[in-house]
Length: 280
Length: 310
Image (cartoon, rainbow over all chains, first blue to last red; front, side, top):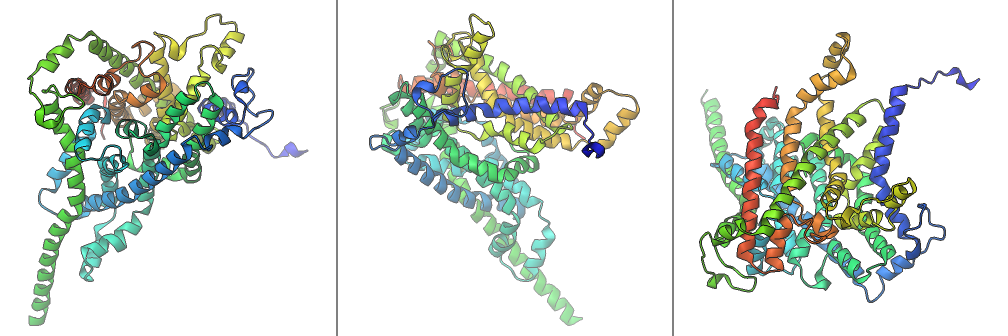
């Protein structure tokens, strides 16, 4: 018989697994519901009992999104451009700042660091109005720079990257100094390549936050044609009032890049949190 | 001898040159961040003090601001709507903070125990955290739809005659929003706790088992105290985040029905971008900030009593 290989089934483990699977289902059910509704005609979104695999999948919801009188494609393009620019600028600024705080000695370093750090105590919602007034006078409102620039000066990641750089032994740089390497070269040739995993974690989280941001585009961008995907989706809720199927298709496309990135690179999300004591 | 001292001297010179270069590089490297910090973080923060003392209106220029002293603050303490919003913000935090921290710990403990398919389950549990607020709001408002939503359909077929109104009910709306916020955010708490749990030395559990301690006792007397620094960190984070609820409420209910889910964050938004009273809105925001600060400080002072640092 095949059962000769003793398979040890541990009862508590099975029960715990069942509980965990139930929790996991609660977490992914809304996504499955969204995905399946996006392929259904509006009339079937609310059908009960729920059918997660549509009887006759249709694509017309997606076609509606990209039809000529909708701006969905435009919002999508805006969001991609805005996110890419943010990642580029942010990565550069955060890396040099964190490196300076971790590895270079200059007067007043700790004092400046603590001043910067204190900004983390102020939640963004509290300064919404003041930021609006400041950005307006800088002529940043209604441009994507109102979203890109503030996100680029993120002390949170300076802190995380500084912790990472501090973990790299000084012996490495000392050898390079004796060999006559300049500080910039040390940063560029030695430190950056070593920091790749931390940088990747930072890029992934920044990507998710920036792509998903709702509050800032909602407040700072006024033209519909310059709007981002998240706010665009809410406009959709208004213009397609009861067409939940089309809304679901929009929501699916808005989540797609994030979920794909997450599924392929989740190691960097989870381990990034584990190593740096990340917060939200 | 002479040659040796010469090279030492050269080395010293080289090193002091490096020290100078290092100073300059240091300032140069933090310069861009410092400029951005001043413009995008320090300026709005300092500005809020000034703004909250003025009668600034949406359209008015900074040049014709009028200082009205503490008038905004006097007004807001007599403003029933603002005070009710403050109460709702408190209620929101009082539910949100313990629920998300506790749930995060339970999920982490569950994942950390001997279960099958751990990786896949962890992936699923963290998924809501990375997803888009607006997409989530659309999906949840359909799932929780009072008349036709799947949840209420299930409840009705289980014999529940009056299923909850969820987002449409005056009394259920705030807990429902918290529920969705916890659903979305708990993954981060779980993963953070998971890292802490994995750092608890195994020997401690083994020793306790030898002494005849049960699973619950081990959890209470070993795990909880040893991960208390993480708990402290997460509680502080949760408090700050719990007051940061503009996005989720605006997309789910816009503060409704009526004003049943109008928290301080929504109230600040309404005062500034609906009533155009920027000065008054800033005063409200200041009040909110001071409250967050007090909360955080109480936690900070209280940490000695329950946080164990090694």
